[in-house]
Image (cartoon, rainbow over all chains, first blue to last red; front, top):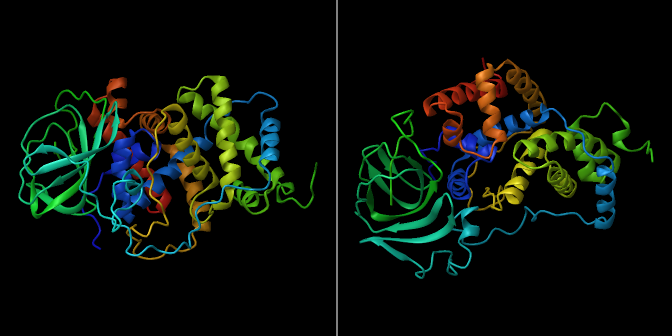
Length: 226
Length: 191
């Protein structure tokens, strides 16, 4: 499988590594990471920065007895430990169509062959349907399915949107986006993506709480509003 | 209860060694040393993220309980002890303070696009790069270091940090980029 050529960029990866991204945006970044060893490596480096920053924090003493209380809890736990799922588990065949963490969010929606069922899709515009996965204050995260050759109408909004292609693809004046590619869109960009002839399935999330004003730092290079 | 056979009895052991001892042997003395190092720092971390003192201590215990339970999954060839504990604390506080899930890849997922090659044993590399990273952090210009800490110790994306601190987004990005570049060079040992 080819590796993605459109990435979240360092700013979003640091937000993800630090834990400052909302759930939907984190899901988009992590889904891209499942396709992208380079961004996995970049995030592990940024987590190492988090570890180093934690180590240099000024320690704040705990109340006396904290360790003893915890040790008593360990006694009650007994020897059983939280075992991870064994890593040598039999590989399912065929392999899952969608990677984790996305797959967990699709529970109950996947047919026996691992494809998305036909139910639950809601009309967005002609040729475009969506399923909401997460609704939070920051915005809605959803799967969007487009038929081939569908053009997304231009319009503006106040946040940043992340779009990860899962199947098929789309193109705009910035290039072609295929499986695993992550497009970052903000309101400074005005363009009209069109889905590839075979159509497009993607994950679409909003980073909420943004009230960007003025033309500052619009280095993020996409705007796609489905 | 001094146990002379316990690895923790050897004071020269690194945090990584101690964590491995907890994972392999359920070594309580080693766990106690790890608690002594990490718990007060975790308390500071959680208080910076808005936990009041009592709540922070409860959450510290929860995090350290996860450290105990998951220690056998710790791989010193992949991350320093501090990095590993940081990721557990970050995920726990997202769960506890924000009541949200933390979406993460599953390294064993058959659907994961694999690395071009199997990673080598990076144990020594991890140790050395942590040292270089700490030195590089100390050398960061203050304005870069301040923004970097906000990125890790405030529950906000960089765009909100920009707005709430009245620093133009472009400035936030360029400072963070410079910081990340320097730290990445230190981690990869390229000058």
